[in-house]
Length: 474
Length: 144
Image 1 (tube, chains in turn yellow, green):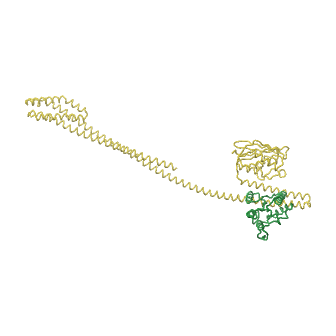
Image 2: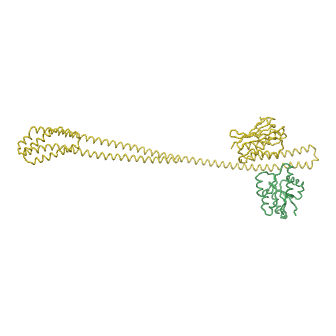
Image 3: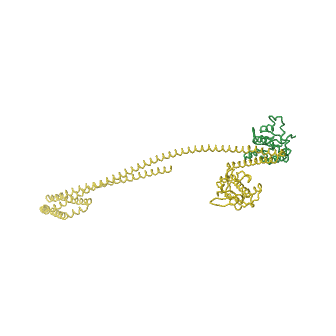
């Protein structure tokens, strides 16, 4: 969440920098264009001014030339010829200047219109000066005031006027262009300003949005933190509760432990007394009792003994509930071997026990030892009344589980009681038939359950029984 | 010089009687003294209280001790015996109904010499007491 926020912030920063960069570029372009167009305008204005000036000069100089020539013819004074020559050069230079400043087509047209007239006028004026030099002023005057001279002058003047009016038109056009370019500049500037305004509007809007997004995120983050805190508090409370109940559980467990301690100690003492004093009675006063009396004493003793075993089994069963499982790799072949060795020491039997190639499992060795001891000793016990008792122990792997089976050919059981097999103190046979307290299979059930496995059995009356239990492979 | 050889510490009169009977069968009970709880046992061993008349050096050859007793329990008695330089060499046999593992652990930690669980079956009980008496009184060689 936080990293995302900073990223967003970075992005908006970059955005701002780019916007400023674009703005600077656009403003530079604008300033440059403005400067450029101003320069161009200044140049055009200057040129227009020059044109107007030249136009006036042309008309004026034409008259000055005619007047100078005529005055020379009237007075014979060479001063006028000098002036004529001076202004002739001036006129040429003015025409040259015009050529530079206006489209050449205008000058060409003017020249073609006035060329013959100009040539004739110059020729006539030169002739006049020829006569003036010979002091034949009459002849010069005749030329300069002739109809032909006037006629050519009119033609020249018309050409001149035409040029002037064309220059006016050109000037106006130039003015228009200037105006137009000014308009277009204005338009471009307006456009740039518009673009910048719109751009900056979006920049500010984006900045605002980013800021509000940031604020929103901070608010959300805060809310999240609050929620987390509340959750943590709740969790802490729940933890406290859990600890409380754990403590209570430990207390209950301790109570249970002292309870079973009391059972093992206090319940056993009177049993021992019953047992012992019946024995003493038998030893010291046996000769005074008849057969029935001795049988009754025996029953008292055997019942006390049985109750002792019952208490022991019950304690073993309850202790199992508190015991931690310590899993190791268990070689079942060796385990069975040790079970059979132990059994041969405590039980006399004639059963044949077959076990080979059993799977290895991961389990608590001593608990599994007890399971096997209980199941195998059961199998031996319940097949002990048959002709050739055989106990078969096997294992197989199925769906990631190892299933162990202990099969016997003994008395078996009715499948309709199969659900009672694994209950505490549940028995399917009387004590007289087969001794036992009904705790062995309950212990088996509890141990296998603790390992996360299952235990079940199949049986047929007088044909035997098979007990299975499954353990997960790991 | 020993006027007695076995100190039996047992609060249960029935158990005491059965124990004494078993020892009698082996002629071991004539040198036996029975005290009824831990406090009395300590008074006797350390010659204090009602036993202050006793000579402190007159120690039993073996102490047979029950664990669950009123006033001072067997474990406390064992601790006192084994933490005293004078008395710690006396062999102590715990004879109890308790098969509980923590008790056994604690007794051996304190230096018990033997830990015997009383069998419920009378025949077994008699045999256990006889074996125990014969072993500690006759077979075992205490320091002089």
